[in-house]
Amino acid sequence: MRQKMLLLISVMIVLSMFMAACGNSGSEKPATTGDPAPTAQEPEKKEETKAPEGKKSVEIFSWWTGAGEEAGLLGLIDLFNQKHPDIEVINAAVAGGAGTNAKAVLASRMQGGDPPGTFQVHGGAELNTGWVAAGKMEGLNDLFESEGWMDKFPKDLIDMVSDGGTIYSVPVNIHRGNVIFYNKKIFDDNGLTPPTSFEEFVTVADALKAKGITPLALGDKEPWTATMVFENVLLGVLGPEDYKKLFTGEIAFDDAKVKDSLEKTKKMFSYINDDHAARNWQDASQLVANGQAAMNIMGDWAKGYFTTDLKLQPNVDFGWIATPNTANSFMVITDTFGLPKGVKDPDTVKEWLKVLGSVEGQDVFNPLKGSIPARVDADASKYDVYGQSTIEDFKKSSLAASLAHGSAASEGFLTQANQVMTIFVTNGDVEQAAKSLRDAQVSSGMAQ
Ligand code: GAL
Image (cartoon, rainbow, N blue to C red; front, top):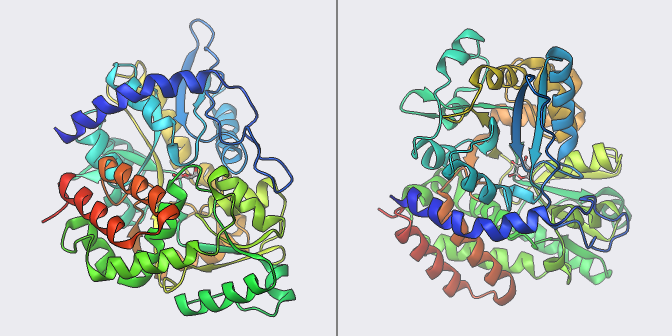
């Protein structure tokens, strides 16, 4: 019922989204200066090429356009074209970080009985309480069996894309969400050590501020980036076990530990760039790349942006460290693709899924995207020092599901949490934020 209402609301907002998406053909690349690029955040519906009459085609729906986002997808499409010259790939990507615009377009298409061949969806709640619960997805156990995949993906990841024993999508990657990327030169020149705790963060940030350097870059033109800072603070304060309990309702969102997390988040927000609301995530990461800010809390698609697009060297131009108190935890964001019910040619879609689930496919996609492979048997030598250390971290960390990227809670709760964070960045009202989050926890059915 909740899902139906959500879909209905999505359909209502989608028309305006869709018109905005169609009406803008500006470049997605941020400017090379530190100024926010005026067109970088605008929604953009990519040109869709129609397959010639009679030729098979597969339509791939995602939000991977522009800097830091699309190189991996294009690499995967190239590989697919080599293997299947007879199948046309239709790249139906809709710009907007974390699916800000794409999710609404997708909802409208799914509701209207016009599903794309396959679409980007996060493992966890976004898939399971969303499209699976709505009865819109085909099971893929046969594909996993026939491709020999059952023991090639970590069990935790298979669980994130399964419901009641049925597997519903194929993970292409694992992104880590609890990372501080920092400008190495700024830290070295100022004799600073990257912070591991909240106390150290404040000490380092104060030292940077005293030197006139912006300590923390934020680009919350799309509010999910602020939600990411908050979820990482929650993880650091509560630890991975209690963090999970927020989403099972065992811990209330107005609990003292949540309020403490909000206080700490507020403190961190006191160190951000003034123009944060005008920037998207690339524009904020760029401040660190350019030496205009020292740190950025972002998923490691920022690492893909640094190395693939900006040609920066890991451990030379930029460094990384887990967000305060989360060194032993891994905030998981897995991008997956499934098979919607009612597509014209499911076998062709499965050919695409086979390529993105193969070792070869994962090792083409992930080094460009900044993520690590979802498969346990990928070739680690294809990854740089960041990728290799993240592959190791994943094996020994406690896993946590990202709220900001739809894995921890329903889309309904996430929408409200993003609204709360938008207000909180500006007014810093801890009591109000905790109350609104608790209300959302109750109204979205997540409270016990
Ligand atoms: C996430 C997605 C990543 C990356 C990021 C920024 O939701 O999982 O692959 O695209 O958004 O748009």
